[in-house]
Length: 350
Length: 254
Image 1 (spheres, chains in turn cyan, green):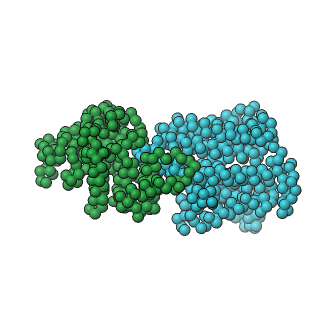
Image 2 (image 1 turned 180 degrees about the horizontal axis):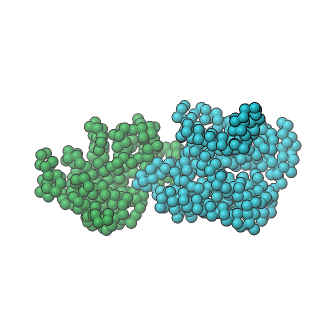
Image 3 (image 1 turned 90 degrees about the vertical axis):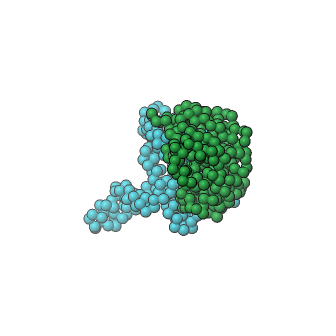
């Protein structure tokens, strides 16, 4: 049963199994293990970014296609839910219509981009995605009558998914709509993750790997490489959009900074590379590490700076404002020591 | 040997002012093994590239079983039964030996578009792939990644990938190049077996004269891109044009 769910793709390393199990259990029991608004928010972000990073890995790690438009697809999903909720009124139908139309639009847009560029050469695709993503980001910030511009906009989701709904208490934790919302996001993220795990282990997924390894030979044994690359691109875009929809439902807000910014694109690249390209599981580890670092590194440094107040230079270096510096150092070290990513390193060292 | 499987009509390709393949017209029949010989740079591999579609022809056309395939993509030609093994080993280096062959079988069976089934649950594909690996004696290395294989074993895998496609037309480009003396017979025996099946046609680019003598029914000689001789091995090797244009001394000494 578990093998079927994981599509026969086990972590293949004891430590990796433990780490993944820990991530899974922490996310599944987050509201009870780490009570508090902020930690629940972090858990939801981790769940969503695991899906987003895994969908990027599908493209980058499995198909060998470099795209810079992944956050654009993420944003399309988010704005889909936001706009649908704003114009159709709060309700589940708005969430469903918004998510599905966002995913469809993302897939269609990915199809057009792929059609224009994947035929030529893979590097062309990277450049075109960069151009289109920039154009869309500008468009969203300029069309403020529709998108709220740089500020974005908040919207209302069904009452059952917000803190207004109170269902009592369990194990000292208030059961409210936010908790329901969290489990909705957790469950959907898990399903999307397992679907991607299945896709990369399907005959289709094997062809993608073959194309990554040697597209010339893949074509020569009868695979229409453009078709496979296009389908992978569309699929990856649609899943990114769905992750965006989940993010919008969680935040009850959409804006360029949370969904479209290039900072997120860079984060995504780092998540996939640090976790280990072409493994899907790597995306889970990379996303968890990065979100945790972004959320808690500043706190950690704040307390470290306070503890070293007496030492002149060190306390300056540990100032919470320097957190990006340390994040950078961590990345360089991890890429240097784990060139195949954390998953690659763990699997090789079993 | 009546049925023509593959035929080229005035097949030509020019790179700038250089004519690499010059109006080659030639028919290849079922059950026939044709050796293609010629000095380095004679256009043998380019001729292959034109047939399998890696390079578009400047003029002329290629017919496969009577249909013009000159406009078709490489993958489409392969799906129609034109199989090619490469001179420089050309595999999926990060994947396992079994996976390489299974990908070829899967391409041949048209199973690559299944997104939500598990690849490992397609047992028929795996069984078929293992049968092919046994033929080239690589079955015990099934789980090795290809980049860990010796050169000789990579050459065998290259041949296995071609057999897995089960094509009507086999194109071998120096299949035993760089193989050790004990390894080459596995591949040569295999080619002999394929030939014995009689309903396919085999094109073989080869330099080793002993190989040609034992396997070939027919030799065609390319020189500066043009077809200069075509016929039974004995006759072609003895002909003046070949002696002078290409083999000269080398053959005279044999």
